[in-house]
Amino acid sequence: MKITIIGCGNMGGAIARGLAKSNFVAPADITVSNRGKEKLDLLKTYNPEVHTTTDNKAAVKDADIIVLAVKPWVLESVAIDIRNELDLPRQIIVSIVAGVTIERLASLFTSGDSIPAIFRAMPNTAIAIRQSMTLFTPYNAVPEQVDCIRAMLDSLGKSLLVDESLMEAGTALCSCGTAFAMRYMRAAVEGGVEMGFYPKDAQLVVEQTVKGAAELLLATGNHPEVEIDRVTTPGGITIKGLNEMEAAGFSTAVIRGLKASK
Ligand SMILES: NC(=O)c1ccc[n+]([C@@H]2O[C@H](COP(=O)([O-])OP(=O)(O)OC[C@H]3O[C@@H](n4cnc5c(N)ncnc54)[C@H](OP(=O)(O)O)[C@@H]3O)[C@@H](O)[C@H]2O)c1
Image 1 (cartoon, rainbow, N blue to C red):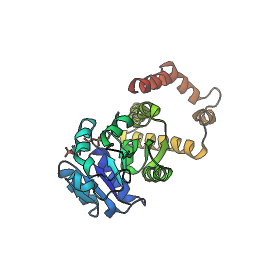
Image 2 (image 1 turned 135 degrees about the vertical axis):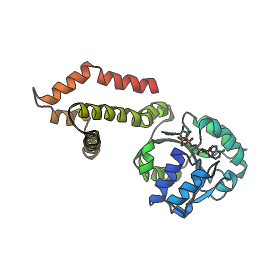
Image 3 (image 1 turned 30 degrees about the vertical axis):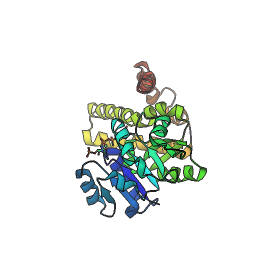
Image 4 (image 1 turned 45 degrees about the vertical axis):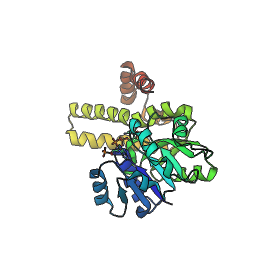
């Protein structure tokens, strides 16, 4: 299995680093192509076994999976650059380019009778530490190809196959969601400092608390309210805090923010 990533920016570089650490593929079977050399050189210092190039055409030649990780406005020129080199539908195309639909991807990569197997995927920046939540939608893919891409994405965190109609909402939930969770955490750190903690200590406390809360839900499969019930003694301090936050519009603000992002 050979994987080529086009674009070695925040996301492409993180995917390359994550895959190089995973058991999904050997580092020597990863090729990363980028416009400039600087980021490729940095990647090489991280793992010298990963192949790097500034030639997109050469990069896609022997690939089984081609991950497109460029900005949306660059996608068309990249597609024009590589499409005559592709062996479709043997090669699978995975696009993480935000806002670009499967219909658009298919129109960029369909040539003659050969309809490509395309995946539209939406990871988040935690892919850098192989903790991404990645939503994906397949198009014209056989079950083995779906299983293969699911396994690749699962090696970088967790994945969920969704209908494309959910991709925008999913982007708000999982991609923008990282920033939303961080904003809660920033506020909690500031509250901790106001209550007397040193910033570093407050940050550690908040980080581990949020991580523990997420792990608790993942491990039990419980709805958040079930775990909230365990912390809220009648007449106790947690319910006082929760009610004060709700009076300030906490849940409404989160839902409104998500809908605005979508
Ligand atoms: N950031 C997120 O949270 C997130 C989440 C999900 C999806 N996405 C999507 O992921 C994509 C990449 O985002 P990013 O944050 O990684 O952007 P980025 O850091 O700007 O990376 C894009 C990379 O593409 C390279 N590039 C530009 N033109 C190229 C070409 N013709 N051939 C090969 N490489 C080329 C750039 O190289 P140079 O630096 O040398 O110009 C740059 O390294 C975007 O479409 C975005 O919508 C982002």
